[in-house]
Image 1 (tube, rainbow, N blue to C red):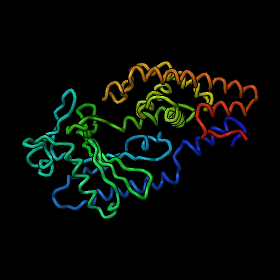
Image 2 (cartoon, helix red, strand yellow):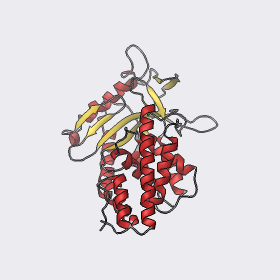
Image 3 (cartoon, one colour):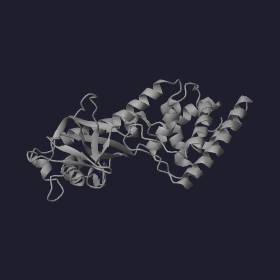
Image 4 (cartoon, rainbow, N blue to C red):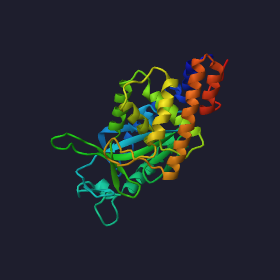
Length: 332
């Protein structure tokens, strides 16, 4: 319960939006345990060699843009290339394996030296199932990752095998190759996404990360089509990357973001990494529905601001509750 709009948003972010810091610390320790278990897989000549860099975090948990509940944690395990090389096609990347890399050769497409990413994922699944610590865990493979569901925690781990490329001449640039879901590989670089979020957040007095979290929550509970988290994050980051006049107050920022969604949801949004192209996955019909909901809540947000300016805190808080639902604090 709150007596001011600012107090209501402080409470809302703390109790309903941001991850519980205690659970977050436990999750980080659990992730460290998982990486160590992978590093300690039996040295039986079958499991792939791990790169000295070991692992890299990715996804919204790593970027600190995840909202409650903490239901999944993404982790990339970096494999040693052992002299393999890539051939790039328009829709996928092939990894070719030299004759000296016998562990990788066992996981190639039949009759070739082309590394099969699904077989690599299956090898991770096989060895995770042998770890006594995870004997009661549910371990599944999808086309791009192994999912480890520990019964003692509320989150699952999505474990993605990957390779890091050799630094390009001149630029020194490297990136990662991860499964593409079809047996081959695709490029990504979560370091760029994480650094972009940190950099844009540092430019503003308002917490850009909190604004992303609030819009994610809004999108998750409103009667609108599902919006992929990565796209939504970059839509908000683009706004804050192009403006320098943010306020210190969440309720002042939200009408601006609803207006930004309204004006931009129908357009393409290019991957800031320069890898994936347009990341706006939404259909024309879905874009229109989201646009209309953003317009509706933009108007409600402005009404809430006007009520606050008139000193009508109870009515203003109630109006914000119409936008964010019953989890939003009530007036006390």
